[in-house]
Length: 455
Image (cartoon, rainbow, N blue to C red; front, side, top):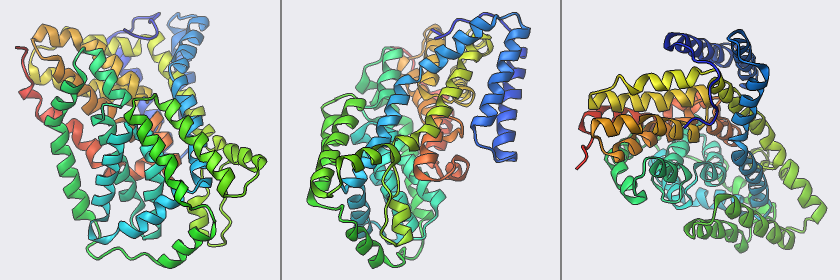
C-alpha cells in the first residue's frame, strides 16, 4: 500500500523517462559539479512540482504529497538528533576515546580491514542498528585508520559492510523485522533463510578485505603521541565502558532504539559531569555543538572533535528534502506506475526475483529511504510471489538483499548522507569498497533461479 495516493496515472514510458531525467540530473550535480546533495534534490523537487502542475495535479495535492513524504521520515529525524547527542556524550564520558585507544592496542597487523569488517559485523548484530554501529564503533575505527595511515575509503567500506551485515542479520534490526512482517514470515525463519545469500557475501567480503589489507603490519605513526594525548584529555576512566554496556544490554532486552540511545546518552552525560569536571552549562553546549578537543595535537583533536545536535542538521535537512521529493513521486504517479507495471508481466522465477531486486534498488535511488524500499517492494510483489507459488521467504530475503543494504550506497539517501557525515568519507569514495553491500544483490540475482517453491 502506497503512503500517498497518486492523483495522476502516467504511462510506464512517461514514468521511466521522468525517472531517468531525475537520476541523471542528481548524478550530474553530485558527480559532475561536486555540489552538496541538497541542491540537486531541491531542483528535482521543483521539477516534480512543475511536472505535476502540467499534468493537472493541484498544488494542494502536491503540497500534501511532500508533507506526507517528509512525515514518513520523522522517526529517523528524531533518531538522528539523538545520535548527535549520543556521540557528544560518549566523547565527554570517554567512551569513544576509550574505544579508540583500546583499538590501537588490539587492531593492527596485516588483516586490518578484515578485522574492522568482522568486529563491526559482530557489534552490528548485537546492536541491530547500522547507523548506531557506524556512529559508535565506526567513528572509533575510522579514527584508528586515519592514525594508521590506512586508506579511509577501504576503512569506511569495511565499517559500512560490517554495520549493514549486522543490520540485516540481527533480530533486533528494524528492517529485518519490517521485511518479515510485511510478507508474513517468521522472524527467525527469515534470518535463517537470508543465510543462503548473506553468508557467502560475508565470506567473500572478508577474504577481499584481508587481501586488500596492507602486506606489512600497519605502522601507527607516533602511536605513543596518540595514546598520550588521548590520555591527557582526562576523559578516559573505567566508567567509560558503562554507556556502551548499557546500549548493548538495552538492545538485547529489545528496548526501542530511541529509548536505548537516550538512556545511554543520559548515563554518559551524568558520568561525564562526575568525571570530567565540566559544568552543566558546558555539557548542554556540547550536546548542541559537539565536543571540541584541545590537546594541541591536531590528529587527536580532529579525531575527537565530533558530535552534537548541530552536526546532524545537514543530514536532517537533506532527509526532509529527499522524502518530500519521494512524496511528490507518489502523488504524481511516477513510482506507482513503475511498480504496478511489474505485477502482471512476471512469470518465471528468475525474472520475478531479479525484478524484486531491481525494484528495491530503484526505490532506494529515487527516494533514498530503505524502509520505503522494503515496504513498497514487499507490498507490490506479494501478489506476484503468491501467484507464482513462491515462498514468501524468498521475497523477504530479496527485500533485504537489495533493499536494506543498498541505501548506504546512494549519496542522497538517508543512510548515505548520515554515514558520510559521521565518518567524514563521501559515499562515492567508499562505495567501491563496500563489498558486502555490493555482493548481496548480485548473489540474490545469481541464486534467483533457485528460489524455494511453496510446500
